Image (tube, rainbow, N blue to C red; front, side, top):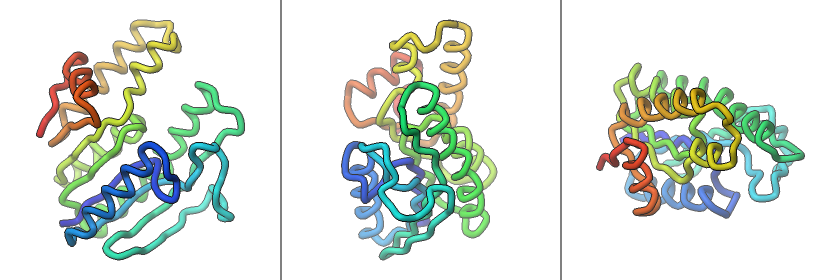
Amino acid sequence: MKIILYCINFAPDYLGSAKYNFELAEALAEKGHELHVITSYPYYPEWKNKEANSLYKYKEEQGKNIRITRCPIYIPSKVNFITRIVHLCSFSLSSFPILMASQIQKRSDWIVIILPTIFSLPFASLAKFLFRSKLWIQVHDFELSGAMGSKIFTSSFVFNFLRNFEKLLFKAATVVSALTPQMLAKLSDIGVPSKN
């Protein structure tokens, strides 16, 4: 099977989602699947460019059964809500053409997207619809809930609109899963039952 792993964090970053994503990619490749990892440059947890390459160029890497495309990304020198949103959106926008090109080149059987970032989910959903791939959403963080808890959204109308849009995207997925039982319960609380 051809599988696209769509994630903002990947090796050589070693904490959080990056470690999980790398180990998932290795396990899938070892089973003989053709894997295309669409990711960014390593930057976490230092929030600094860890490579000599420019962050504003695309870079291709090849491993055994794993093709990695690193997409341009903005890494803020000072991390706050606004700069983090720009950071996440920069990856979502720069990775979208790579996602489409990968699908045109050879349709994937599965698109596996790791959240964060929620900003990439509309693009993954579009690719699923256009190319009839299956979509697996793996939740590592609830970005909207975190934003609401930190009082970033002062308007309940905006938050509810975004929450309903998020639910719509989740419901379009073939599979929705999460790291912990508590996260699965939270998915259910916001009206998105896990799909296995």
